Length: 183
Image (cartoon, rainbow, N blue to C red):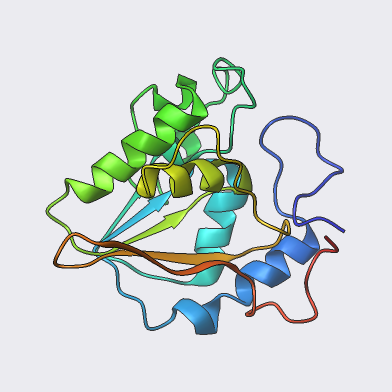
């Protein structure tokens, strides 16, 4: 079973019951986090994961750079309308969802590293995280980085006061024991 509801066709399916259980399992993991900014992909499953996690931040906003990979088709998300989400968080009025996935990842990392804010949480998708990882560590585009499972996972990347970029954990899904999707 996947965390994505496969009974709904299209580019913006909701979470499956398993995905909802995994998102609820985030609550104890994130309850003590109080980030300055929470960026949420405006795709339904990331938005719902954010809501079910019950995390709260000083500022919550949708960020189209955090959307799922476009799998090489920059126009794939062009027709999606996110205006109905305005009551959940600040809408992203940009056209960044039309950019190449790697460019979006680099832009998101730039938004974080040049911000006056110190702490961020990003609710995004499996298909963008490999690009975020590469952008964060300035890795070559030739390197292939993939998460092992399609589960609701947590990664923690840190920039120290000295500017050193560190990986504390990557694709950790220890908060969902017994709820993992088979690899």
